[in-house]
Length: 196
Image 1 (cartoon, one colour):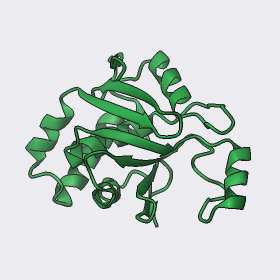
Image 2 (cartoon, helix red, strand yellow):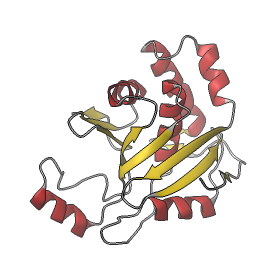
Image 3 (cartoon, rainbow, N blue to C red):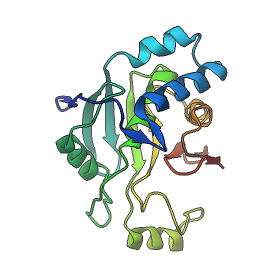
Image 4 (tube, rainbow, N blue to C red):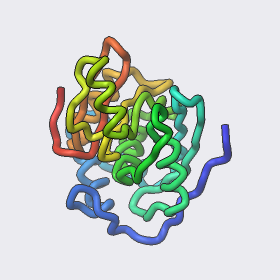
């Protein structure tokens, strides 16, 4: 694996769905504690006060990326550019700016699942052309997919089952959660709260 990239940390008011990042983390913590995913509010606060290494493996390109994250702090623009490329449409070899709130969401999933494993990226950004092509050959691909907007990832984790990822995503209430048990992945996005 490559060396982790450290994020530049300097502010606490990064907007996430109308909330500050601090507000997002407090809301996520309350939701997870309410859903019995963590034992106490104290455990939640402690989890979010530390840096956490997020490891990613893109199953389509076989690339890996590690990101050292700490909540409530701003992401470095160079790191986001690298992440955009990592999450690119591998069919068309094009990328776009991804919603930084996805990193916050994946951080929260990592904390609330207790994972030390790797996020397996099944799909992230899709160009409109790739999305149209997938709609023709596949069932269940949305015409106005959040993947096109750079606001969605399809994942599995090396040390957490997809059913648990789904439960955590639903408890966090930070966007869409789609569960695909036959294909062993979960769709997470930063759009409207909904599930399927």
